[in-house]
Length: 529
Image (cartoon, rainbow, N blue to C red; front, side, top):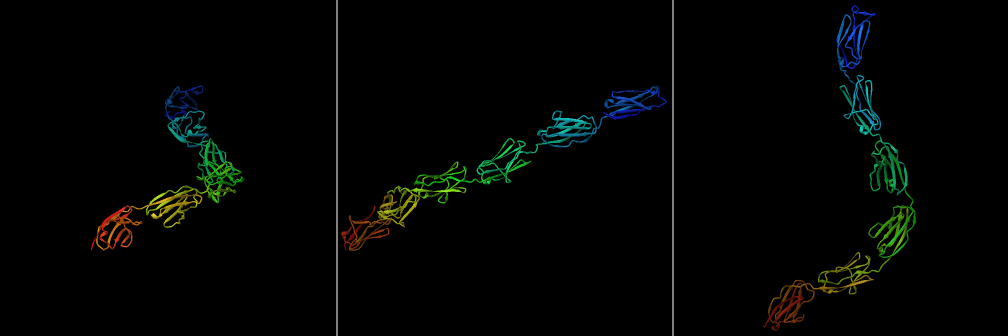
């Protein structure tokens, strides 16, 4: 016998051929003894060959084995080395759907090898949703039913080998349990488009004719569990189209048809007569509620403002005109699609009144005066009078009207313009007195003393700040002078001049000049010849 070797967990057979000359015979059979028999070993022999078989040899079976007969013996050393387990088929990644099963298989080079399954670093223990199996060299792990949390890394390890694979669990594709349904509705209807999905957390997008819908004043998009809903408020004809709910994996579409309703006037307009500044109300009743309508006055569209109110209550439509004026009279027309009706507004005019009369004015000479009053109607016609005589617009008088205001402007007023002025509205009138004050007159160059020899001519002059309209006064020793033989009074712009001819010594004295509040004086001396 020589040296024998084997791998752990495998059977080992030791054989020895005996020499016939040395084999003792006993009942025709050779007898032998094996030293170091082990549990799990068996002996056998045929035709001079004796064998010792050790099943499932392990490291503990290492040692020297000897076969002895009555006359001889032989021995051999048994070495047991560990098995070299290798990986024949490694794990592969698995992509599965939620609620389904995922199985991982690994094939080794030897059967009866113990191994461990690990998920995300944690050892897997067999349970209802985790089944571990071994079939010869194949080890298996089955996870069922899968959840999204099962996504992770699955590993197998045994006797120095390790392999891993990725498990990816996806949500099942979304399907429509209840698709959209085609609808045909009359206009102004509130429309609800609804579908139902296979799971509640799937995002959805809504489209109309390939244009994505967004929530707005007339569009409401919301979710109720598995239901996806879009609501359109008071649909018009423009809401007709193809509506689609898209959840990525699938989509559903439906056709919405909005048709026009036939509008009939069930109660037409009636003529209205109202006194000026009163309120006029027109009412029209149609066959349906929520109908869009328009109002017209004398061919022009009417819009709501401070004086005009438009409202609708059910199938009744109202037009309210506040503070009716004379120009509001005319035809009122109501239209709702193809239906229309008309009525007339009659306005009883009020007499024209002057609601804010003229006021007396005092003006400075050569300035302008403004007289103004307010009448009750913007279109009221008036005329301006001065002392009973009608005035015409021109350079002197400017006449204007703006809304209910009436104005008279007198330019370059003089003392001669003092008078009573009247605004005549035919049915009413107002008058005011205009007074004119002279301008302040100043003497800028005083009189100078004059000395002449009789009967020579004496000239005295002074200069004022402005021209005077009224004739100034000249006096000599307190006696007023008047134009006449020997006395001339001249005016040259702002210069006032007194010329005395045929003088005599008796004319000597104090000469005074007076123009309003302006005064000047000088001494006149007349010498004898």
